[in-house]
Image (tube, rainbow, N blue to C red):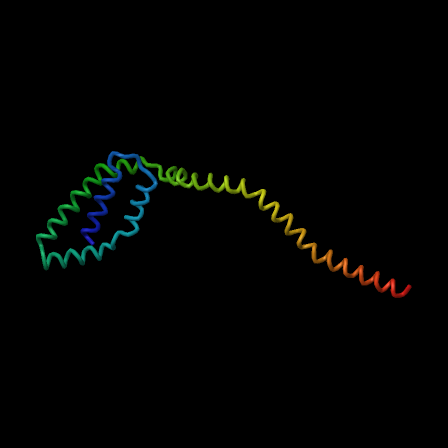
Length: 144
């Protein structure tokens, strides 16, 4: 877990360093935060490493400290300036534009469908009414 945490920090630092924040970069930060292990799990792993391989723990801690400092000095100031709401709106706007285009194109088809559907709804009434009239006329002819 500690090494995964370090790798995730490296990935985030590389993705935000010297770049404009994109939706994908913002999403990777959110995923990193969501998937971050519980502090107690990290402590348990550190205790196990201390008992089995203290040198590996020291290297991991030094790398974690280095990447954390890099994030705090480079990443945090940049993230404080990012308008995540605007990023999300710009990203979703492309899908909304596609939706509007499809809606515009499909509205004519929907109207045709509704018109035909209404005609079919009345078809049973017309057929029933027609057969009733034929029967009445047949009965009327029989009485004549």
